[in-house]
Amino acid sequence: MTANVKRAMAITARLNLLTYDDADEVRALFSEMIGKEVDASFLLIPPFYATGGLDTRVGRNVFVNQNCTFYDLGGLDIADDVMIGPNVSLITSGHPIAPSERRAFVTARPIVIERNVWIAAGVTIIGGVTVGENSVVAAGSVVTRDVPPNTLVGGNPARVIRSIAE
Image (cartoon, rainbow, N blue to C red; front, top):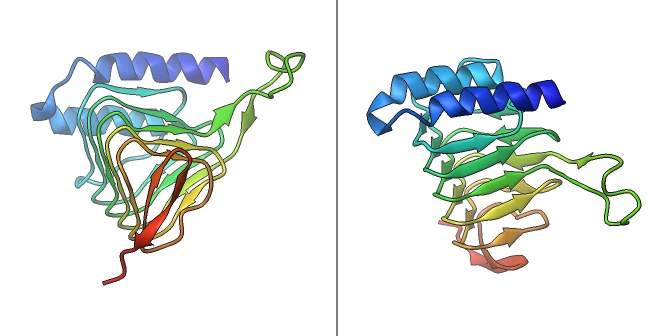
């Protein structure tokens, strides 16, 4: 795990020297970080932070705005047509609550973001959560449980606000 974190930190340091106009180079470095080539429609605006990468899967037509953080130890699956706003944190790992266990090990659970989701600015999503297809997570929300498809959620902890079915 430590070696993978060091590798990701080295790659993101290089990626964070780039600008919006360097989209091809950003894609190449992000692809290197996750160990598979991302689609030409993938767009990420630096800066970006990650602690791994090899447990991340990204679909087509995904947009990641600036200053996002992906901790993918538990697995991070981002489907096609997802939009991720600035300052979003996708955190699949953590530590036990018990003080005697906190430094002993890391816990990890996957995050799944289904097709056509919009995650607005400043959102935090924790491990074990699936965000359902076509849903919107309102700005500043903290998502601690699954988001049903076709819904708007918001708050801390995020709760269903309403359906957004067309």
